Length: 111
Length: 113
Image 1 (cartoon, each protein chain N blue to C red):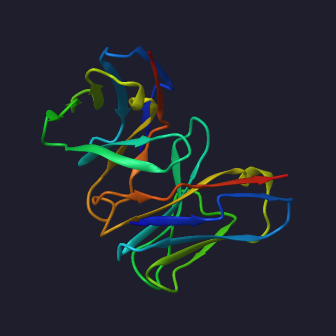
Image 2 (cartoon, chains in turn green, brown):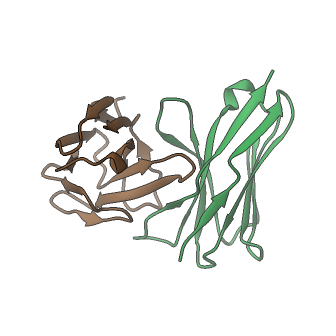
């Protein structure tokens, strides 16, 4: 079955890099996503990566995908206090399939 | 730019009461979803709809019913609320299937006592 796991909590200092990790179990995942949830709000799509890619960079965000280990990571460079939020990874098996979300990682950025 | 709007924002129910959560989207999206969010468990899909007049069960459908009579609205009903249904409920929509970005509402916090 599908299972997506994340660590619950990460604390970093402002200006440092943050790395949020995610593991998934289904090797047929075709698309992997990172969503951000700010306090009192719904989730917003941050970035995504196709399973035939190893890396994707988008400004301060870098997504790394290790298909062999079924490991996905999100690196946030120069982390700011506004990056404090819960980050969810999610996988999809392709068109017509629903997303499976991980439990979320709460990122706390200390000034 | 309303996007996805959920009402109400908060609600307290007694066990056995019923209620309906309303979700409205103004983006002409085909797909709509209802999720529940519980601490450490991520989001779990309750029901979803692939278009007006259609509904389908998700991962945790028991105790809930849904209707999509109009394309822009997706209603989630609890016929007889139970304490296990205490949660934060999120509605989302996407232009087509879930490969497209999901747009979420701000959630409804429901407490069942």
